[in-house]
Image 1 (cartoon, rainbow, N blue to C red):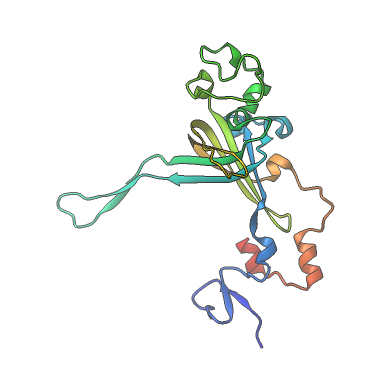
Image 2: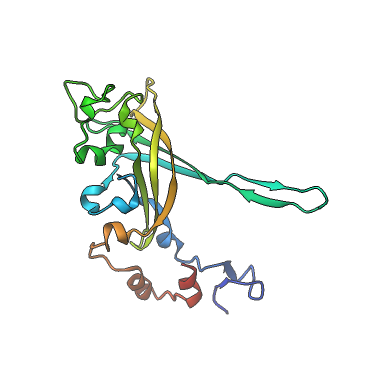
Length: 238
């Protein structure tokens, strides 16, 4: 009996005997998972990152993260022609996230960690984002001049087998919405925020965090021990 293959063209498509594009027998540990995903805040431009250990801060207790990239495109026509043609404008990027509220940095404060670490005198603004008697962990007041300053957001993806998948760095992220809802019976209180960004750059996690030094076997070693075969097609698809 023939093994399961991956259909990579119309010629080798057999829907009962093949997956589409890549082998999926190992999808449970080659797929990205929320627990193998990391959200970070950093400088406004990716090129400004000199030392990831100090320039980027993981946003802990983040419970959801979403981004949407839209490129305005429309079809045009001209008198005398029955054909239409597309034109496009600059892509528009929106990012939203939710974070649990605990005794520590709140969401706006966490997003602006890079600015604080670089000595920004936010207390001296006409509209300081903090209370005078406690200036470190709780930022508010979206009218503050602080929020005229863009920051960077990053999300990195690994698989359950500890392989690097990829990441996105959102440049010139401007925080423009904050929502908190409190109701009886809740187990937790969450802060929800959103904003817009200039660019969404593809980044490879190794450029930020380096190879994982967990001591665990690599995916190739796992596959070998399990007797799984990675075909050249599957490797190329990955």
